[in-house]
Length: 338
Ligand SMILES: *[C@@H]1O[C@H](CO)[C@@H](O)[C@H](O)[C@H]1NC(C)=O
Ligand SMILES: *[C@@H]1O[C@H](CO)[C@@H](O)[C@H](O)[C@H]1NC(C)=O
Ligand SMILES: *[C@@H]1O[C@H](CO)[C@@H](O)[C@H](O)[C@H]1NC(C)=O
Ligand SMILES: CC(=O)N[C@H]1CO[C@H](CO)[C@@H](O)[C@@H]1O
Image (cartoon, rainbow, N blue to C red):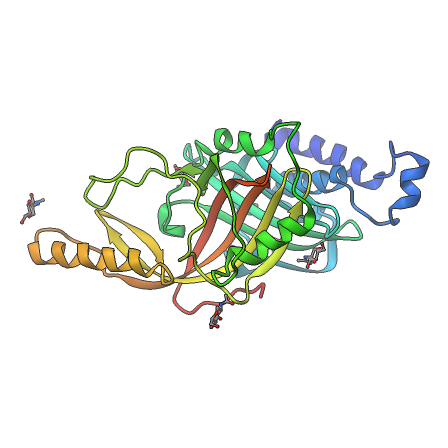
């Protein structure tokens, strides 16, 4: 369903009904098994839709916010009413990717949105936490250009690329919560010896895009990069583990802070984590050569910090999907969330 401002109000009324009566439709037996204030998958889905509808209405006050809530937009702590998203979003569908953790009351979602009268779309990704059916945390990010995150991106390709995530084979062998937790623990810890098999069809995206690395001189690859489980993956000893564990879809979300450098990359620029020393050394070599030829204007390599939510999908004993979602700030930044 695609929301417009006109339908948002109606959708919200509908959604509120869902939240007010989460036990409707459940059997007597299942009601007695869950706590009074548990939020089911339907309940979490409704709250996520409400967040998007409230952006369209430019009105955060209609949300079931907890008396005290935490919120960031592109890593900046701010009250919802001060965020740009509540001013700019003019169209948003239901999330293209939605992972729900009913045990921790958390959800991760991502979709393409339109802002203002822009014809170009932006990539929105977010995590929320819900306690007693009230929102206690909102961690929101929006990509408006590669300069925001230093990586490749595509709001246009995002919906198609996420279809596979949301339609896993019915006969898949689901990973247990413990397996998904071990994946989260290893994501930003290269010391962790967990061995991870990568499915051949595993889908790798950066901010919605299947990455084709053209190379700084346009002599790179023409085929999309696949998933990988690198030994030189970025480390964060304080990574935020198990933010969302969706056992139904096999999705696990992990947060981290990644120090790195913005490098010129041909005429554009790219973020390379400091832990990927080889990639940085290669880029230094390329840069020295370009500078020696003296006929190109290039950005100076500059320290930066990426705040990332890494989204992995795992079933049939293999990694099936890997997404890098990252937002850049200046050097030595820390996360408001850790
Ligand atoms: C990995 O091990 C090294 C050496 O013991 C340690 O300094 C580093 O903090 C560890 N990294 C993580 C992410 O735990
Ligand atoms: C979510 O629940 C698991 C139990 O499976 C727990 O170990 C984990 O720390 C929780 N994550 C968060 C962010 O609270
Ligand atoms: C810059 O110099 C290199 C070699 O010195 C040359 O191959 C290239 O065509 C030049 N580029 C421009 C834009 O003049
Ligand atoms: C508003 C805006 O500039 N959004 C960018 C986010 O990513 C998309 C996908 O490629 C770009 O087209 C948009 O320009």
